[in-house]
Length: 499
Image (tube, rainbow, N blue to C red; front, side, top):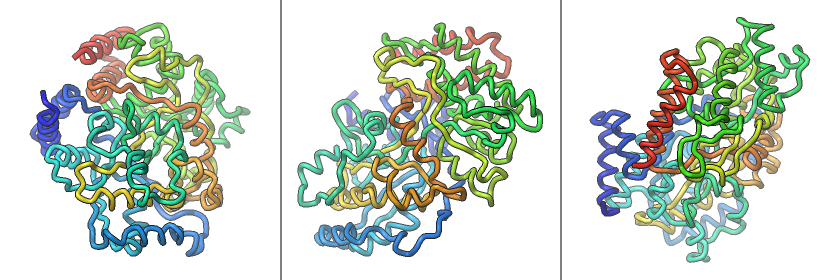
């Protein structure tokens, strides 16, 4: 199939799915055949904590850099009156840009920026239709990491724009300031950068310090320690309080995320170096034995929860720990929304029992307990205003704008190294809504513990259907043993991976 035909077919399939003319399983199969990774389709992380920062900021603290705005005004002179468009999922960067910051860019540049905040499947619908038609309706693309391979040739590599347009280069933009692990794990495909890192949800360890002090525990340093501590808390305090909270809903991507983290943390991998499913090997079965025990330390509702239910179990004081998305931490600190403000602590993920190297795995899989789910921002090659879009993209992803996004956006994790040390970010390292007191843990996790899923066309169907459906059946008692479950996943996964 020619590339143009593939893009047209993919655009029609996404459109049919969004409009209800194609079911999810059929769509995932089509996406796999057409080389689109859509593991996170329709399952973006809810972010209930977005809101005002806890620290008392002056007006100057909340203003973008005057120097940067002066550059925007000068370089944008030829583009005054231009309208730029971006369709994006509801993420902290997009919400803060749209709600608080773009007005400063618009005033300085004389341009208008239209940001559409949509469910993730509708973002994909807009993107694929725009790529297939080459109409350039959208100037910038929000790119989930699982879409990078599919559209890598339809966006500008930002290094090309820096080299080709030195007169449009933002002073101090410094592309090397983006955390290297994110560049490699989120927006690099083969020899290209598919935009720059934009957003980084990632697993960290969170625990109730008051419960741990009462039990005489230190923060869980290893996977085994976390498990035994969770068992002890459940035994001592259940059913009022359980040791851990999970995201184990059958058939949902959240279950795959949690299982993957536990698999990696017990020395396993999804694929071996020959590209065969390896969740049913010795390490994979050890991970399932671990997961069985951990499941018994969770509240009974865990098998019906995605990450939302998991987060609420912590927020309402039902469970003492969770290994999950760090973006929930600022919400836990909000006294108006939770029962546990000031009681949670964040630490690096527990040390794995052993850890396979990427060279021991297949399809670019990178084992790490800190499961990540990031995205990129890129300029479309179909844009009618690529230079104007590049100006906005530099400003929107600059260190100064990221610092504002982090403080105004509820303590979200930055993708630039320097932003973690920005005085405005450091000033909010205190208990309260939108805290940033967990961000050093996020940065260390990105550098040392980050895990990335494999990159292959069939991963859309494998991660959003094959794995969580069979795991759900196992935990519901419909599959007799962990080995039978893993063998069934292996059979289906190897068939899909070979297509």
